[in-house]
Structures are given as C-alpha cells and as structure tokens.
Amino acid sequence: MTRYWIGVACKEHVQKGVQEGFAQVCHGKPGPLNRMKEGDLIIYYSPTLKFGGKEPYRAFTAIGKVQAGESYTFVMSVDFVPWRRDVNFFKAQDALIEPLLDKLSFIKDKKRWGFPFRQGFLKISQADFWLIATEMGVFNE
Image (cartoon, rainbow, N blue to C red; front, top):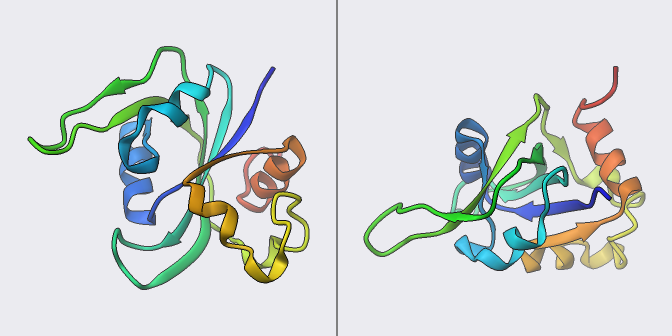
C-alpha cells in the first residue's frame, strides 16, 4: 500500500537531491528514510531558499517516487555522513503553500500552519498528496 510523505528542506538542498536522485531529511537521520518503502511518494516543502537563510520561500518544490533498496550513508565531509534514499523525481513546478492552507487536512491550525513542518518529515493523506501534486502540475494529463 502506497504511503505519502512530506520532507522539509530548503529549496537549494532539494534541488541537489532532485539532480542526483536522492531524498535526505532531518539533517541526515536514517529513521524517517527507513519508514519509507519502495513505491511510496514524497513531496518536499521548502520554507526557505537557502540553508540557514532567512529569505522565505514557502512552497512545495519537488515530488517523487521512492525506489527499491535501503537507506544508505553518503560521505559529504569528514564531519557529515548523512543517510539518503533513492528517489525518482517527477517533472514538476513549485507550488506556493498559501493557496492550499484551507484545503490541506494535516494543517489543523490555520493560524499556526507551519507547525507540522517543524518535524522535518511527516506522513500525509492520499487526498492531501494529490491536491499538492495537482498544484505542482504532476499527474494532470
């Protein structure tokens, strides 16, 4: 059974993952990635453009399908060896979150809508996934 996820990362980091075909969440922790199974679908939400930056972006920035295989480590530097998972990303356009806030069921408090994203990784409903995917121009044909 397909499950639907949201990963949270700055747009700059999401773009690197899309280009190289991997998902990395929660500062490289393995737990969230190990919850995903082959065939699951993931959408990235980017609150900012750059890591540590203050310039807000607030958009869904990538969408893809989890591939076969397990999570694995990748040496980015001597001090940072994060976990990754292979993902096949689809061609998509960024979709601002504000127009969707009243329609997304996982946003319980519309005044504090950013709260669920603080987890860095969350499971969402199929309906929420398809709503976002449609806004991103995926699966519309």
